[in-house]
Picture (tube, rainbow, N blue to C red):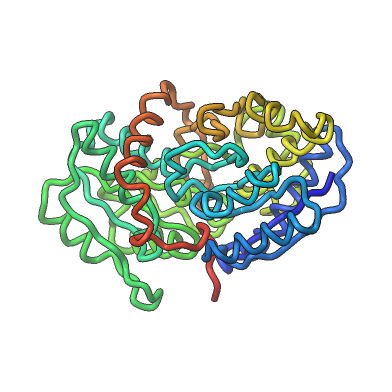
Length: 377
């Protein structure tokens, strides 16, 4: 079986491509299969559907049976006809910060970090916890993805409101949260919804600490605000930051312990290598299945993953994982993530997310096209 990997790059996560490849290899080994020779192609920040299409086309022409790619769902839709026409499979690794396809793609399967679902659940948690009047803040970068829509839609659905929206400047040298702090000082707003990633999250924590934002307000964040590679670099800002995520290092699960041990170098066990590990388990299942039956096997696959028990939704071809409520705590002056509990009753929020997809999902002109969080310098 021939397998091609389409791997991105990111200045926010310089080892991202290596982490994905290492995660796939480790997952294959954990699944009892030897890693085959991979045709590995670098796709930059995966910003152009046409370029992704070309890479997929070349991979299939070179004999690939399966293409594993960290790309946007829109790119998967754009290239899907290639796989359908040639009866080959596309396995998509996805940040979850774009909307998923509105309709099932027969020859594409998605392993997602479910970013905007986590945003929806975090917003619901805020309202359910009594924080019904909120301000929203995000980076210029995150404003081009779907976290703002997810937060706003969920807050409105669950009976809350957003009374102020704040976007930080593009240049890091101009970063400030002062307009947000000034608004909060003058208005009755009891929660802050926030979406930042990487160095922008670092800036938010730093400036928030300096201005008293964290000491005076409850912060409810996007999942990438608690991503642990970056969180390790950030001093504890005070206060309470809560967010939902599909994975954390401290999950007390046998599969997570095996994963952490297999990728035991600092920073190697991260959200990207987690979904890559799951891709390795998918490939291990494919290697032990008749080639004509792989699609059927993947449609019903259930796995014990570092994220918990994950299963493929055969109606969408999206792998669904547990979601956990997490909090940033003080670890001798450093920021540390702790898992509070698992979210229950996900079906309702998944259904509400699908309604958002139907309402807004085809409006790609108001979105960044590079795969989240892939940036060039």
